[in-house]
Image (cartoon, rainbow, N blue to C red; front, side, top):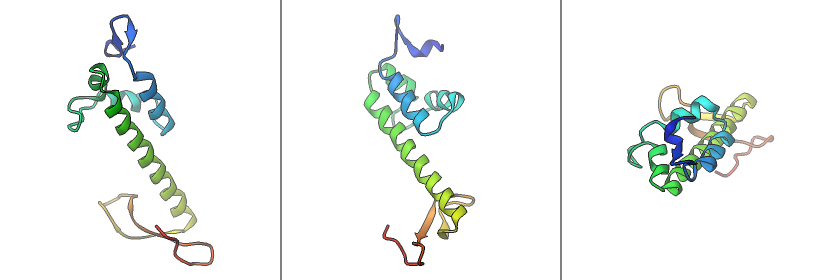
Length: 112
């Protein structure tokens, strides 16, 4: 266990919940560790440093945003495989997130 996960003899407050959110959004152990120790200019510092400083709410908001993004990407991938997404213009080259037009089985556009 990394020393940064400990606050004295106890696990850093909020770490269990943050890891749960990361695992729920599809991260494996290595990806979760990488995320916890990667600097985030909006915190500032790394998520594990913010947890240690009792700023778990901020860290969990970012983890939850990742979960939302992962869900959106997965839905877009499934829709692309089913032929239900029309990409007009990618946000960045190679991006799966783009302006998408979803259609129902009859071909009618679905509301955003």
